[in-house]
Image (cartoon, rainbow, N blue to C red; front, side, top):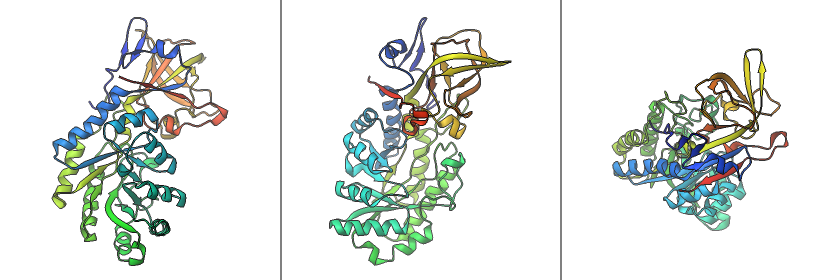
Length: 398
């Protein structure tokens, strides 16, 4: 099953290894809490996209969604594999370029692009700005005119579909702040004054994250194609966004990359037999390539409740507390005797909990736990809440 491959996590008699690196060796040089990324898993995940694109005989560009993971070594690895970047800030643009990602493979999304960020993107010559409002188009045109340049833009369509995902990461309905409705897109293309220094090169859509059912995605892609036809202009590309879900549990059944790209391609080729297709995956590439390691500070019991208090907190890894997200948790040592356990952090919030009622060995102070699939929306969402230091990141090269 995709994204639930634990071959890179192996137990020995005295240790546990991640991608062939003994955990004890890593921890002898680094303090917890920390993130560990595997180059092997990262490359394997990216290759699923390139192989699926090739199998569908498609002109495809994979722009990694940097909001999921902006680690420089991760980005360098993906750049060497030919990846572009989907960015949402000027900071991410600078990091992408620093990692060696070519500007002409960068798409800039987000509803709040500032004049400074737009100016930087135009100067660097990025592939496209994904336009999310009429006002944004007006600003990009004005900035381009001032710089005596022509900016490449694509409208981000809001397709008015409900994605089956957490409400905080659903982005494709009219009540969400993202994208533009079809009628607004068709109206604004007629306003010649807004197009003096911008060129319409594409149309994009993105309806949310951790999408495990393709129904809404395919509906959105079809509406995107229909909108593109109504524009009555030659487009260079169709951008189908990202958000493809991963298997955080052994019994989940997220779509495979090949299934996803094949179904998307079947819809697009029905309307556009020859057109470039841009993908913006993040989680599907980086999630399973990351592990969050934290040390047990102490144990605590409260009647029949057993707690492991660890040195990592919700400030380091916020997904469980923010989204009620489930992540598999592995102990640093195995035992046949397992007991129901809650894993909690040091932050002064009840929500500071990584897992409840998990069956774990009777772990003790100075043992470790490894939280899997934390390579996406882990370190990028960390903070210094409670005046704590940001967790370190380790990259395990092949």
